[in-house]
Length: 165
Ligand SMILES: [Zn+2]
Image (cartoon, rainbow, N blue to C red):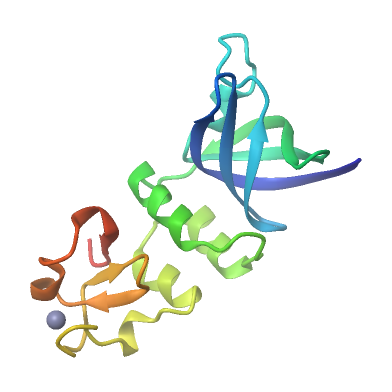
């Protein structure tokens, strides 16, 4: 049984079966990890208040039939709206530590252009994936492609993020 302690930002917390939950963490040491939370839906759970999206926590992770979270302590809240954390959760690859992204997110204020640039999609050098216009203002998460405002209108709203706001 392996144990790890790391700082982490909670990106998402979702049910997994009747009693368990799954929490997406962006950890300082290991990058994004999706870990099991035992019985987090029980009212008695002491962990759930600490595992709300936007919390900066100290996490103790245990590797035993998969990774699960054994303990969590909220240390602070970061000033990033949950909707952006959910988008970030979709963009981050698992188990890839990224000190620059960690610094940008934990120190705030949160802005998409530097975060996307750190992840390898620099808006400054990008063009609209449909019409080729420079300085695109939207990013399609699944396609990993930039779009201008006009072309982004044709895309499903929940799949694109506005990078200027
Ligand atoms: Zn366009």
